[in-house]
Amino acid sequence: MLVEVLLHTRINGLGAEGDLVKVKSGYARNFLLPKHMATIATMATKHHIELLRKRRAEREAAEFQAAQELASRLQKLKLLFTLASGTEEQEKVFGAVTAQNVADRLKEEGIEIDRKKIRMERPLKELRVYNLSVDLHPDVTAQLHVELVPPTDKAKGKETKTKAETRKKPATKKTKSSPASEEEERASSASE
Image 1: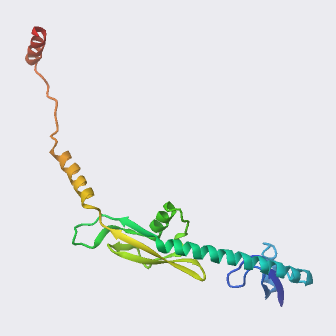
Image 2: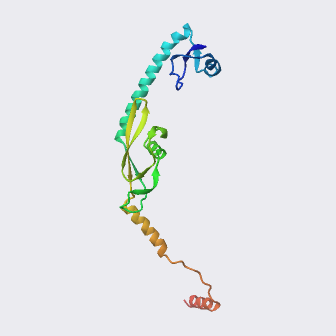
Image 3: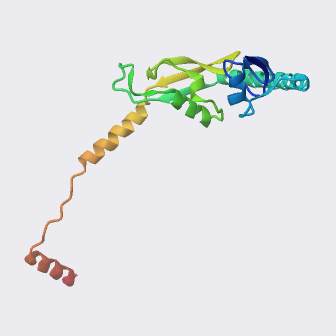
């Protein structure tokens, strides 16, 4: 037996807030009604439907507008990731950039986006420019420019110098001094 219910929240596969849907009575009685996700549709609740639809339309318009503004902001943005590479001729890098890395960098820029909304087939590993799609709204998708660059030559030079300097420094060992050499040191310091 089917009953008509008014949904209070969005339920995937069933409907959105304010929709009148027909569901099996057991589903309504055991799941939707106890969790306050829906109410049985009566004449009074049908009047309430119009109010919910107006609220939903206003909320969806605001979300759509915010998503468009964010999309234009993302399209102007270019994220640079510096990854270590083996040689200058080699286009592969050590490590990779994942959707979580991109989401963290966007957070540093003041933009909160869930990593699941950033579409990547696989982690980024080659030194080049990528155009990633970001799903901001069911009707709005933004393009984000991400570039992987090798470390600068200056940074490489500094790293090699510091490593070379640490290798060149000889280890100083303390040797035991003989009693005769200690007496000579005392005598020379006393004569001064």
